[in-house]
Amino acid sequence: MTEEENNRLAEKICEADIERLWNSDYTVLCPEQSAIGTMCEMGVLYGWKYFCNRILICLSELTTIKTTEERAKAFDKIMDEIVWPQFNKKNYAHYFDIRTNHLNEKDWRRSFSINQFLYGIILAATADGTLHNSFDEIIPMLQKEYIKEEQMTFESDWR
Image (cartoon, rainbow, N blue to C red; front, top):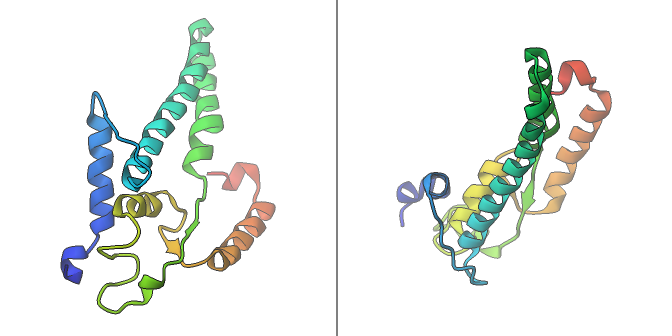
């Protein structure tokens, strides 16, 4: 596989698989231990169901709400307690594989190494769109985020 053929392969696979999962009426997965991509897909499906369940619980409270103002407050509650905290969550990932040092393929974009669907999920779900080679690379980012969290005010910086 040339570098050009491999260009954005993980993102392409991830996007296509997520789109198919999203638009499917049914999914059938074989959760074999070696099927890392399938395990990720199962995790995505679980995450969607979990997230939807949380929203449905909040929406069930709307049945007793009579005014537009109360509905607006309920909507804000869903956004503030469910949507924004998850959307703004900063995720990081690290993984070490000696094969990342080979010259014929580049970094994590390899024909044999980490599963490309998993890599696509990592790129989409991490705060910096990166799979780091070690946890030591992530520590400075977490320290920076911690300092930022300590200094921010709820009203101006939360979103």
